[in-house]
Length: 304
Image (cartoon, rainbow, N blue to C red; front, side):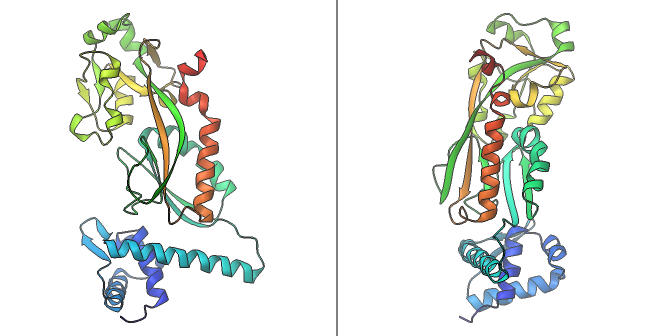
């Protein structure tokens, strides 16, 4: 095995974070062909295949994941040494990739990013807000806000908060069809929910908690699309209070009978949990969720 070149290792680390060579090349100021050649040289030097070349980009192999952990430790050590030599106080810097639920990312995290970048101007943040989660264990993300506590993988997890979903309908829809007075009345209304075989977490299968026999007639894999269908007058849906309560065109339906409790968990890979930038993002999320407790609980908060 040949001693690897440090510049190649740094290039490798960038591609591990940005799997498409075109994106990595743009960030590094190096053409994609050169990156590909240097990655192959690094693999030859180490005697290991570090990436699987796929249509979606360069995906880390097990050997690549192991090398990523080691190079990130070297990267952090280099920053600390540089700061000490310069006589500067260590400040959080670098890029953090954070995977969040679609609703939480849209309604809670994204509006707070402005405050985050003011507090931590040297941290670059990738906020991955989709109808699925990136895997922290596979190093697809540095951190992830999940609906359940992860039980496997080399992860550090902490509970952030509970939140509630309630039934909502548009003022227009309820004026036309009437407010349901009982759970049984829900079977006479159009229900909006998830596409069953595209549900990525069992915590999203909540229909039995709404009422017996309730099933969605209109479906979408996107929570935001469900919200917009409700607002346009298509029917009723169970939505997080933090997403729906502040919309004046929506009304609560049977809030005393339908209260679906869920939790938010923060998972971080244990190899990077001590990095300054990771600590900064983690503490910001914890503080944010604490300050948003009433918004997360919604109607439930008024009862306490």
